[in-house]
Image 1 (cartoon, helix red, strand yellow):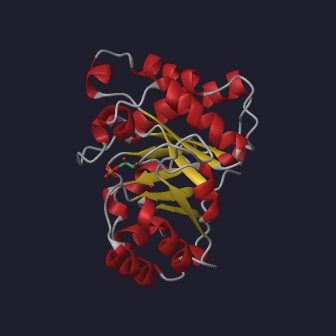
Image 2 (cartoon, rainbow, N blue to C red; image 1 turned 90 degrees about the vertical axis):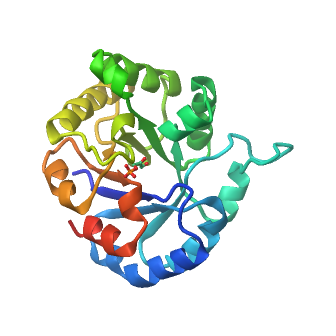
Length: 245
Ligand code: 13P
């Protein structure tokens, strides 16, 4: 049985006061839920979120990491710092990092390797753009994103490797992939994870305009193991509905 993950990616949103309000309203929602709850605040608020989420069964994640322990890397946050503030999960390869910051596949590969070497929970994002979907190359795109990032001998425990299928055209657009579209891609990702890397029990999340109104439809399919949520995760009222779907 794969345990459902409901994960919040706050991106560059929610200030200190918002985080305080969020956790006070969210209360013990995660403790009472059967689902695994992950929240990824922006770096400056990670210690605050960790403190507010203490004993609430919430995993605090980072939205990225620079793949070095420490050193002369101006502006970056590395592994030793994440460990120091109690982060145990990291989102890697988000389409905003690939697209806006031009993050290349070889850097993403280094980050995946780093996450693995440090035994963190990897939340690895893949997804095609609208033109790639329209010209039918989405399967090749996903295959390339996965193969270019993963070593053939992945050693992470299955529960520590989570793939998030986030079609770029669905992120922040209000257009959600239909459950059928998502299921097709999830099944494809699962096949690759199993056949090439020997992973049968890793979770595959859907991300892209997930809202309380559309989560149920997505999660009723066995290949969809949860959601990675942006906009609808910023307020506790809406994220609670997702966690309690
Ligand atoms: P939205 O839920 O705002 O579409 O964002 C999805 C996402 O990018 C999560 O990582």
